[in-house]
Image (cartoon, rainbow, N blue to C red; front, side):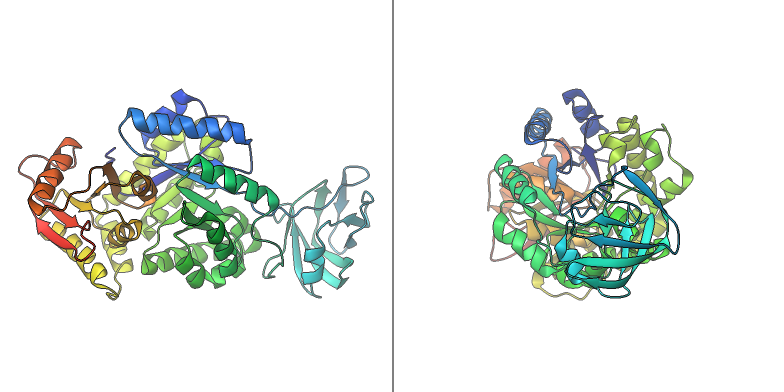
Length: 464
């Protein structure tokens, strides 16, 4: 389905949006990628949502993308005798392996791998960073800490250990079961949570074996430091600003976001900016001006997609949130300074002949004032290369692979149709013209640029 924008919208499906009626309205309203959050719900519920999305796509002769987001390791303290305590700055507290309910002096930390990784001076964050502790002494059995920022601490609150490489498996047992289920369903992308290093991604890839594309979520400062190798081995990246903002100082997150986006541009990988984009719309029909600026700045930075989380999953105004994000992206992309800024950020040395030809298609489209580029390809990587150069006109992808059509739905500016593979240039020219007109990407008399990648030996550009 043609949109009046190139940037994509990812929407999380949950209790507010899991009906057939709402999912169809979300799709028609602008959602390109549907996110199944495996931190919530059960397999039966996810399967029903999956089937509904595929049914909506079939009804509208299109290929919406489905992203399975794995929960990842969740590190939490144990329980307290009175369910909660209050700690003040300067208090001395203890985390240990004793499963006895905690009190004002100690609590169970049922993660020996954390205790083993701690050093004197290490910072511990609890309850999404609301409480901060510094390690005074530690062993494999305990950690004695000083309260730096106090507050209420209650049962099973989350633990973050910034700047420490934790010896925990990339995929929990739950993740492995969810991953197996998601792959059997046929999801298009899998998002890995709390990626720390390249090895985490390699482990997931060894299980996925090409059955879905791999999206690494950047949620830890250590992952930001290793962003180039992580991006290189991933198919895409998500800037997960929620957990990243817990482990980093808030003022450092925008710089990290820009670094991650620029790295993805350089390597030709799609990038999603996520978390708290329009958060006030969970309970309000309109966003704050700061939220509008946040979405617009992600577009100015060249993000392939922006994501709605609770806004669409559990909020009161999921359709309004999608409509608002759609309008922000549309208006921002019309700003000439947005086009110039993205062009500056996507300049890169040609590494292959494919890079050169993809950039040439962008130039041909610009100088001929083409309505669109029609690309024929069965290679996700080649399509991603073309999207990397951010032509101002949309790219209409003709592919013989439904899998590629769905996977490419995350890429900026890519809109797909499925066809029988064809090698004859004259026939492809007619197919390109007909597809562009029928799908309202062009009108009779318009110029379009054709990029043929069906022939693996060469890529040919034709101006029509």
